[in-house]
Structures are given as C-alpha cells and as structure tokens.
Amino acid sequence: MALRTEGKILFPRSKTLQILYDNLVSNQALIEDLLDIILKRKYLQPRRTPKPRDEFNLEKLFNMPDADFQQAARTTKAGFMQVLDGICMNPVFLCRSIQPQLPIPHQLALTLERLGSNGNGASVGRFSRNLNVGQGTVVKVTRCVLKAILSLGRRYVSWLDTAQWAQISEVMADKGFLGCVGFVDGTTIPLFQRLAKSSIIENNDT
Image (cartoon, rainbow, N blue to C red; front, side, top):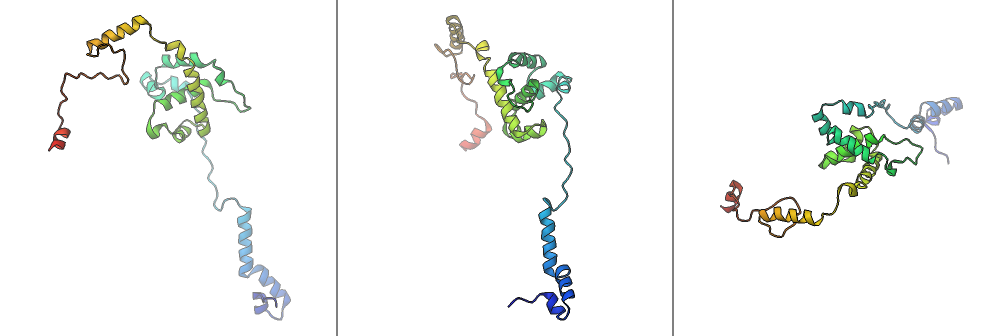
C-alpha cells in the first residue's frame, strides 16, 4: 500500500490540488529545492575577491639605504653582487619547465634572507606570504641557490699548508693550547682563570 502524501490528505477529492501541493508547498518539495541549490553551488557563501599582491621588486631593494639592505639581504650590496656574479652561470638555474622561473637575483635575495632568519621566521609559509611566491617555490629556490653557492667552495675554501698550520699552532700556544691547530666553536678557555660566581649560582648554592 502506497503512503499517502500531504496533498492527498489535504485534498482527497482533487487530483490537481494534490499534485500542486506536493510539488510546490510540501516539506519534501522544499527540501528537494534546497538540495538542488546546494548541489549547484560550490560554496554556500559568496567568496571574497582575492587581493593581488605586489611582485618582488629587486630595484626597490637596491634603492634601500645600506643598513636596510643588509637587514633584508643579510649582506652588503657589493657582497650580494659578488655572490650573484659567482652563481649566475651555474647550470642549476637552467629552466627545463614551460613555467618561467624567478630571476636569479630574486632567488638569491630570498635564500639569503631565509638563511639569515631562525625559528619560525625561516618557515616556508612566512616567506611564501611575504615574498609573494608559492611554498614549493621557496623550497626549490633555496635548494638551487645553496647548491650553486656550495659549488664555489673549492674557490674560497682550501686545506691549509704547512706554513699556515705552524702559524695557527703558534697563536694557539700563546693562548695556552700547546700543539693545538684549531678548535670547534671558536672559543678558547683560559683554564687558569676561575669562573666568576653569578647571583644565579649563589642562589643555587643556597
């Protein structure tokens, strides 16, 4: 036995009114209309118009005062150009994609600023938002620039010769480290001096 609709209950003698009510007025019709609206819309609320962001401006960066430039790029303008000149012809920057890559100076500036940051300040998300590039681009650019810079290692870093070893050993001997030719973290320890007691140590002793 078929279930009676609201239209049949309200208008048992009128087939026309039953159909009109069931299709236009009943809760089932209302639900079907709402479902149809939902399925035709990706979002229930209007989406905000995205705000375009300014592109990275290298000329603006170089027009900064020297102090501001050093804070942004973590080096001097001359140092920046020296590094750029050393890496610009590296094959790592050859674009093999149909998508144009960032200019090499842009990549270097991004990488230097990221290397000069620490903690959350060096996060991929922060650089993506602040420098108007995708998060994947931040990672890719950093890797490419570091690879290019490390390729210059043999040009600037070399193993010490005998005369240089002797010179360093002499300096270390003056510091109290006879026969030592180097140290790990750049700190020498004058063992003949006693550590000064700070208020923290005194408080811990008591």
